[in-house]
Image (cartoon, rainbow, N blue to C red; front, side):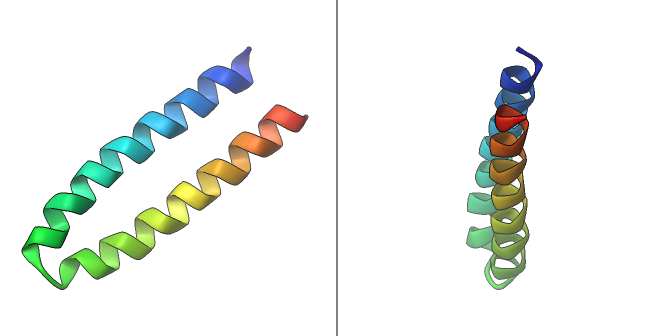
Length: 55
């Protein structure tokens, strides 16, 4: 049950970061840096979510 709630929190954070990304893209080149950071954090979150679910 804990794994599900942690995974939900990760997903909610990813959604918030995605919304921030859209704002950053409008600002221009700063969006590229934000995009790579968000991609890394979402990937890490997905891997952690899968790992937590498997264990």
